[in-house]
Image 1 (cartoon, rainbow, N blue to C red):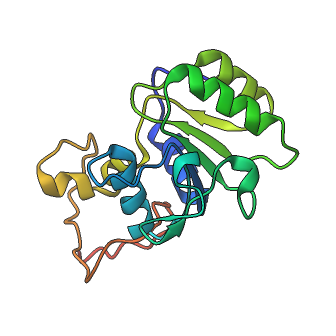
Image 2 (image 1 turned 135 degrees about the vertical axis):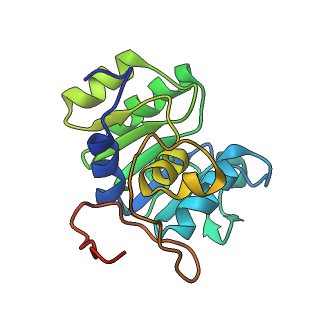
Length: 180
């Protein structure tokens, strides 16, 4: 896998298949990126399990916080790593030591560990590095364009604003009304 460039289909498939996300390095501090990514993923309908040993047993955004991956109530579909590149390798080793494994491992912006990615991919786990699921979801849904950011996606179709938040689902199986 070329981790310097991901196809939109690769990212979209991961974001569509995932329902539960374990966020390693989640923060209760509202100005930290992990906090607002957690908030965003919750708003899109994902179930997010924050992992932070310092807050274990407490709550972040109404979600119970766990001390480690071993403490989770089940196997997440994706592990989102908000730790540095060296620590990401340790997280991947912890994931690979378990019999039940996620479908995907996502390393946040500036986090890249090629050796860990090779190990995870050899075990059949999809890997994304140096990307943010919040940004990628917004880009692929066209939502990020509402703020004037170039989504790199061209379409003549007007975005449809709905009541409340747009919810999880980027799949290509949606019906498109030609009258839109």
